[in-house]
Length: 189
Image 1 (cartoon, helix red, strand yellow):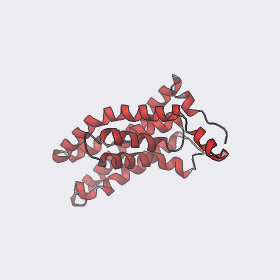
Image 2 (cartoon, helix red, strand yellow; image 1 turned 90 degrees about the horizontal axis):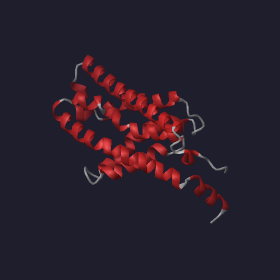
Image 3 (cartoon, helix red, strand yellow; image 1 turned 60 degrees about the vertical axis):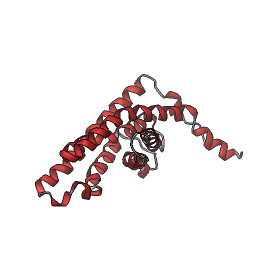
Image 4 (cartoon, helix red, strand yellow; image 1 turned 45 degrees about the vertical axis):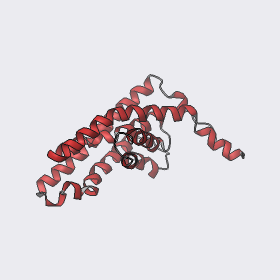
């Protein structure tokens, strides 16, 4: 193994992988009942579905806040999707990666050089505003009256912002207790 390959491998430690796995599995325990509720509510009260949409960003936000490492949100999303797949469909992997990509996006845009709190909220606002548009056909969005449409999108953004706030709170509390100290440690390149 070359020196650069060993250096890259050293950066992805077992502690990091296990921390991401723990967050992903714990998130799946939360998301499984939320998934059932969302599916049920979608048929009767679509607004309730977007009111709880923020729960899907929670795992990625916790991972990114706690670990502050590139790809942590996506890795947690992948693990959550794999855990949920046997209970729902393999599509849950794609769903979780989709919801994990947007919290990761602002940090990727800074090339992971900044870990400011506002970047978490920027990711939440982006997914909250774009999810209803991407799912417009499912929600029959364009047939809604303009005030209802605006309320629908605002509710989704609000849900994602509240979940992001909760994820930041959980990540900060875990960090304060010393959780994942080894997973955050970076080895020099």
